[in-house]
Picture: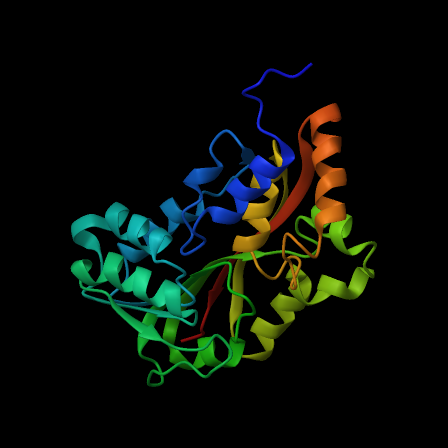
Length: 262
């Protein structure tokens, strides 16, 4: 029989449902879920790019955590002009609090809107996990010779988990995130691909609280997710984790390094 202190299904569900979801700080998952990181180390590499830039734009910055880390890496070499956009209101406030003391202006801008900047305003545009890159707008705000350096979410990312809740999904469900399709979009907007790398990476969920928090935080995975609506799937997954150990899924990521021709 389980020890008294072993959390019940209801305890874990309540815990996963109570954690705040703003920003992209994933420290709460420590010991409850793990994800192998891409080999290219995006945040560190972004710091090196910032150290060589003069005017930089970070698109869909989230809570500003990745940009803040990268600016820390760039140190005194960081560009004098750094601007970030974000479309989700709670994140706008979070990013502003984090980045404004570092001289970064955070602009509230819906992710599907044109970028609110002049043509050729930046020599570096960055983004980590944009919902959908707007290639014509990225190309427009880049100076000739400027760079787009980003990490994107690839096709069918964490689909083992998504399909547990939604059932089998057609292959084309996330084909718009395929690196080849995104390459074509970038090239159609006039950008040259300098480097494009893709990796598939292991994720483990160690308890159902981690699953609940993940689905509340990454809202596009199961778009209508609530604990009440998916009680049956949550219970069966909880029982599976309790009997078999961590639930394993795989994320897909790709690194984009593109250049606007001189």
